[in-house]
Length: 497
Image 1 (tube, rainbow, N blue to C red):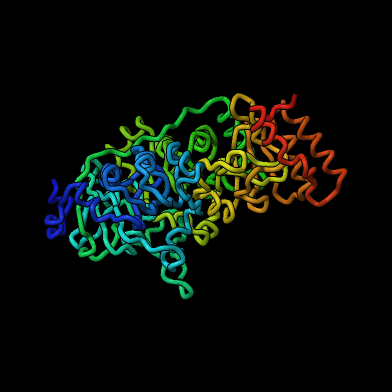
Image 2: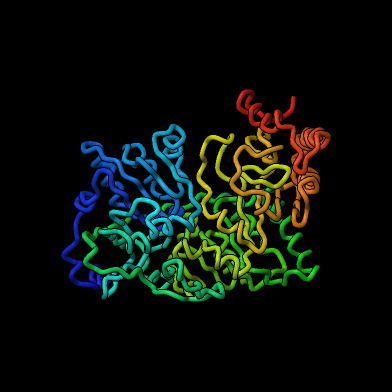
């Protein structure tokens, strides 16, 4: 089996333990590791590195595609290996270190990291650690369940460590489409003109002599925690479905819609799941993460094709999908994240983009990242790439959090990730606000009337009425604009007395 997976035979002489491979990583290095939203991350080498740090302390800058699974960010943070981390994370342990100032976190649009590497705007990658399902006859690396930034890390790094994961199905080979844009300023257009366009190679092409070590692993991807749809997420899906049906009625869309993109997590997954019980058909997806709902839509016959950068599933769905991967393969592509998230392609294909907000304000500004304006949650991820370039930019959230102690709709967001200029539609379980073509004062009226929980609607209307008396294109009572957040910090609730 090993010889079937390592088809460039000289690399059989590079087989080493994870501990030996980790010895190539030195203090102060910048390390690029595979992994995108808990899928396809290198697993054995980072664990060996964390163990080594207990007796041989070192600090590295760690770049990935997005978040890592198998508690790797937590393990590396607790071993004090991470000096700097980018461009995304979702681990509570690492989050704590970031918010304490122990790890410098660079929160980036996911399309931009390798562009900055390629043009030497940030420190270069010294070594790449890439999980693979196989190595081709020419030394090309076949990724596993994600591509992320792996291709560019491997191409740009001086040295490459390959983790060959034998638990990943060999049927993954052929799923990937590795395309690297040409150099600016004479870059040619990216030749993706449909969701199904294949424009690259099924492997990462690098000189095999760059591979300094091959480590065999059999550790599986972490499963995603996907909660089933509840009354609120079903209501959000229903409001969005009704809105899109009206777009069809108005002649702005057909029943096949435009290609869909959705962010990660329970709410976005539940909203996509809601398309199963609609008249929409022949749907296509051009997104980052292909979640449970992707395969539920395939099985329902609603979805015909999906392009992404990773496959991240619940434990139950992994058991269902991976053994049947060959059945889905003709409907799937996995691309580098700079291609899945590229503004040129997003704008060309005309995506309907559905992402999740932590909070939004009465004028349509969205906070995706910071709790209380100061404490990082996960990161902006790809939501900015999609929102700014979408055919239709939609943000969804439940109207309250923490059993009603927090309103997700506030006078002014405590941190801005997506300005009002990049937001078209806001949806909560209460209702939907269509902000297209509206001035700020008109937006506020629609948001307050349609998206706010009943316990917060009157206080928000009162704030807005008093702000209007002060005047301005975007009225605010500045000394009160963040008072709800202050009240939450001091009293544990935004709820009015």
